[in-house]
Structure formats: C-alpha cells, structure tokens
Image 1: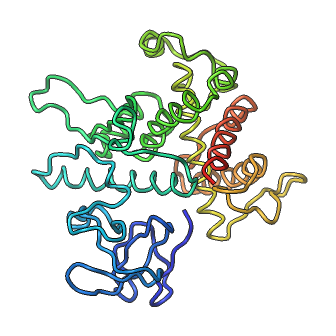
Image 2: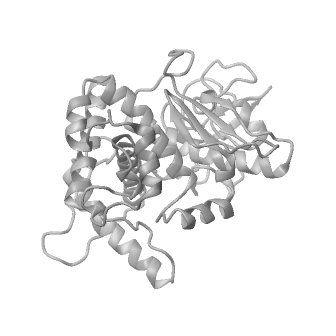
Amino acid sequence: MKTFACQVCGTLLSFENTKCEQCGAVLGFLPETTTLSALRPLGAGLWQPLEASEGPRRFCANHDHGVCNWLAPPGAQAGGFCLACQFNRLIPNLSSPEKHEQWRKLEVAKHRLIYTILRLKLPFKTRLQDPLGGLVFDFLDDPPDASGSIVTGHDNGVITIATREADDAYRERMRVDMGEYYRTLLGHFRHEIGHYYWNILVRDGGRLEACRRVFGDDRSDYASALHAHYQHPPVANWQEKHVTAYATAHPWEDFAETWAHYFHIIATLDTALSCGMTIGPQIAGTLPPPDLGDPYADMTFDDIMAAWVPLTYAVNGLNRSMGLADFYPFVLTAGVRLKLAFVHDLVREAQRKGA
C-alpha cells in the first residue's frame, strides 16, 4: 500500500480514512488512479476531488452504510456502486449491529484485495461481462436453523466468504484448532482470488502444463484429496515445497496458497518501501539493491526476495521483542520460491498482455 497525504493540509492518511483527522477534509478513493483524495462539496451529493482535474463524482452507494470510501465512476447516478462494490452479490443480513460490523470488516479486506488487483493491472470481469465465470462475492450467514455451515470457497468466479470469519474470536479459535500459523479475512480473500486467477491465467491462459510441472497434476480427485488431508497430517518435510500445510492438500490449493503469499509479499513490501524502509541484516551480500523500484510493476523476483526476507527477519524480531507472535511465520524454501517465481511470471505476463 502506497502512502497517501491530505491535499489540503499534507497530513498522512490511511487507506480506509473517510476524513482527514487533522483538517476534517472529506476523503474519497479514486480507483482509476489508486489515489485517496480530499473532496470539495458541490451539493446534491456531488464532490470535486482535489487530486483530479476531472468532473464531479459521487460516493459509492455503500458509503451511506459506512463500509466504503470509494467514489463511483464518472457520470454515475445516485445509488451507483464503485468498482469494488459492483462485485457484491449477497451481503450479510444487516438486521443487527453485529452483522453490520462483520460486513464492514469484510469490505475492508475486499477493498484492499481490489486495490492490489488494480495496482498489479490484472484482468477481471464482472458477472454481467462473463455470466459463467465473472467475479462475484457472496458474504453469507450460516442458516438460522443450524442445519449447516457456510463454507468459504470459490466456484467458477463466485467467491463465498462465511461472515462468521469476520468474528475475531471465532477466527482465532479456528486458527488454533486447525493448527494454522495465520488466518485473517484478507488472507481468505487473497487465497480465493488465487483460484479465480488460476482459471483465467493458467487454465484459460495456455499455462496449464507449465503449472502442472511446478504444482503437480490438478486432475487428481479434489474431494478425495481434501478428505485425505483432513484425515492425516501432512508429511514431515512438507515445508520443503509448500508454503503452508494446507497447500499440500491438492495442486489447486497449493497454487491458491502460493498466490495469496505473493499478494502478502507484494502488498507489504510496497507499504514498507513507501514508508522509506529498506532493511537488511549486516551480512555481506544480503542487502537489497539501493534502487528497488515498484514491486507491483517492475521489480524482478530476485529483487523482491532480496528485499522481503530481511524485512520479515527484522519485523519478526521486533514482534518477539514485544512478546508477540511472528509477523510472517513462514519459511520460503527453494521449493516455495520456485512456485512464487511461477506466480510472479504469470502476473508479469498478464501485465504485458494488458499493456
């Protein structure tokens, strides 16, 4: 995430800010330029972004619910949705403040996901553009009669997120019960979008055989593989080739877990670099090059790794100094880096095709 500053007073801003805490300026996010801008009120629900020279804009309809600070496209009528919220199909039942707060947390994660997709210039289609495989989000509550539980997952562009994952206590309990190092809403979104991009960039992008050589044969029975994964612990040396234990379940899950970690790395590294952080232990040959560039656009995979590993070493050390869990509790072995490099090449290839 790059840094943002108020165009009125220069105060640093956070991505989710709706107003400047220093001068009180109303803020709105411009997805086409990935910029957070102070706004000048024009009346009748219209605002003039100070960052842009274009005409008046309206807020996304979900701004009225306090869950979105993005601006709708130019010329949008009242009640129109922004680029991120247009992908929503089903949202939680807002009959209680608890459900509204869960939706807010889901939207925070989803908007950060869409931001990364925009910065990477990855292709995507709405359900209207592609009725069979377009991207859409369903945020679903468990049935009130306790007849079953909603399963977070992906199915041909439909990403379902169980709203109970927005309950911090539940999510932490599941993380411990499942033996996971890491479980966040943003992590769920990044994992499930990996399945979506497997369809677009691998299956439909002519990279299926190359992907199978790296991740394994995805034609193995998926349901049986998941059942076996939950019945038996992964092999002792799983970290040699997999970034998480869950990645061992099936090549599809391996790809999605690797994709999610690529997003973790790119987004976090961009935040660090935007804040002027270039960290490396004082060991000869390990420091990243002085001019790192943009991890979203032009950094090589080797430069990304050279910057990322020292950063995680430093921040893990800071967390341990405070008695906290590691910031990034994962080991990027040679086998994992090979898979991350494949994802990196997929992304760069998609960028070149879309240029």
